[in-house]
Image 1 (spheres, one colour):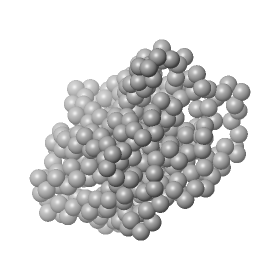
Image 2: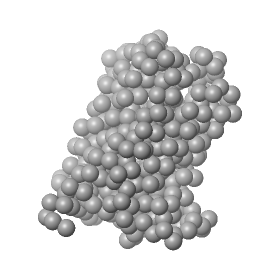
Image 3: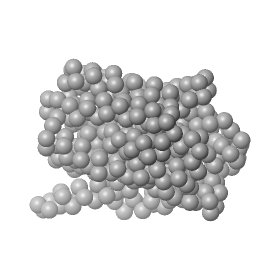
Length: 400
């Protein structure tokens, strides 16, 4: 292999996984973002969003616990294709109508989208130099805010043109087309697969054990629970929050999109900072405290009915709760036992899915009891405060 070949393969892998994650983020988050149109058409209560997101997170939890063997047997590239295909099927099912199919949509789409991150982490872990892994993973993870940006900008526009069903079907088609576009890279990127590897129920326990056996990975798992849970609350309810405050869907979607746009340079910055200036553990600790403070500001700004203030608070949230992924995932891949990067990241992310499962449901409960979106945001930020203080007291991740 020539001197420039490893870099070419890294760039190709990074580009392929960037777009894979972009379409996965677009497909998974489009329904909550255009939720006001769906709720109005189907005459549903806003608390239903928490149920939809909870079902998505439950399916994602099972998928991430079990996808390690699938990645080893079929390869990270094939897993990425399967993830996009499942997401497309799930989105299409949501447009049929009955609530049972909407629930099935959340389960299929959630399971599919959840496999995209362990698969991409496994692939990039093969080609990334360890020192620069936080930056590489952060660059790849900018695809998530890119997908959110597309959903926030294009979602309301397509709803106005084709209705919410047409918007969802367009996202499904995009996921399916890109899954086929990945095929030419499979020969190289799945060259490490082990076709004889079989799936066993014990693999679920193994994945959890990998994520909890080492204190460092266990700390990452708890952090992922708080971070991902708050992220899902922000994605699921922020647009609806603005809509309830009296802003139209287009304005709410624009504010959300502009806020998530900040996460793109944010993820790159934190990845660079963790590679060159500070340890990942210290960075994650301060990001966690920033999430708690920003969430409190979102609640206070909403209570004051100030669009400017709530927009600034959303930008601060974007720099924290939408920007931690590359740092955490690179550290999980670095700490993983040899040959188990997919399992380790899947295990850590499964705790994140527990957060994504429980936090929106908790928010829905607070909303149904108090009727206050502001209170829901404030309370959902408290776990990040606890995690941030714990990471500062026990900087186990600071040792590289």
